[in-house]
Image (cartoon, rainbow, N blue to C red; front, side):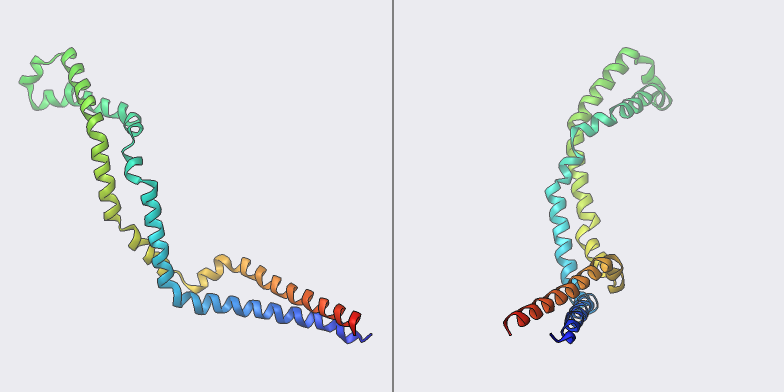
Length: 183
């Protein structure tokens, strides 16, 4: 048996590892910069679609949001009717007592419950269009450098290079075994 054959798996492992490293370098420093605008475009469209799928308007206009804010709103309405109205219109405040204030507060809260979902849907719709989520995501992804990509996924990519080296080693080992058995 020729003992020089045992160098082949080590050589194959180095070749596999080198090819893996080269492929990773090409991916990060050549393909990423060239494909970055297209990747940014597709990811930004995906994000906007997902925001639509989440139905932002529906979540913001959810009546439970009003119930969470109800104590604060009632407190402000009560303060308005009992303090600010007296300051601004002293004549009207002479004719309004606690029972009238409580009735007005109840009517205002009922109206707010009807109005809140519509106002919030309108607000959410405007918010989505004004924020320009698609453009914002596209710009952020377009600004990501190859070095940053390498920093984020470098460890994983080194693992892939190691797998390439290991695959080269195993392949050469299998070839040696096959040639020794059949030659």
